[in-house]
Length: 276
Image (tube, rainbow, N blue to C red; front, side):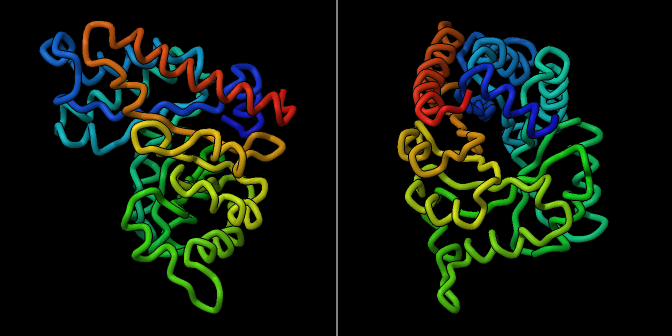
């Protein structure tokens, strides 16, 4: 998927919603958890319920890897279902990989070629030669961790040297890497919304993946206020707030309602910014 196709979907659906697929057997509705292929069955139902309102889906790889080969098979079936039935949506492997050289290339091949994801999340700690192997795939996107929502973000990401915070150094230096201009997105946590002003000074045109809206307490209005650019430039993710809106037999309709509620808020912001 190209960025222009992603922007077209944002305008068509009047939404910049990404639904996180964090499928946890301990949280699934009982009638799903006790049935066949519960992880895939649950994800398929969530996708079908929320697809009118979502422009992207983000399976968290750990929630599938935790169940061994059965979990991996569920991931394969989930991404195949998305690519077959909803080819217009943007797919993100939330894997947070980060290694150098041939290892990074093998990670990229696994998620871009074998599983056919559009994008993958990558950690920047090992620097340029751990990210450029992902950026070398011209039809795919790399989403670099920049400023995260967790409490431990303060341990390193706000460390200041020569007047520049570490996350700002990541943003600045990564822009010079091969393929960055065309294929590099960034992760910015929703609970860090006010920092988006400074982030937009560094990367005014880049897409930002923003997790943390909903169950983690991030404000969609704050994210949109500080983070929207002229092309939208945001993918706001909600996971638990949508997929576990109900753990009963009405979980599909509850997920649909939660997704639609966010989409309506997003529509107001897109209208305000004239992005149609």
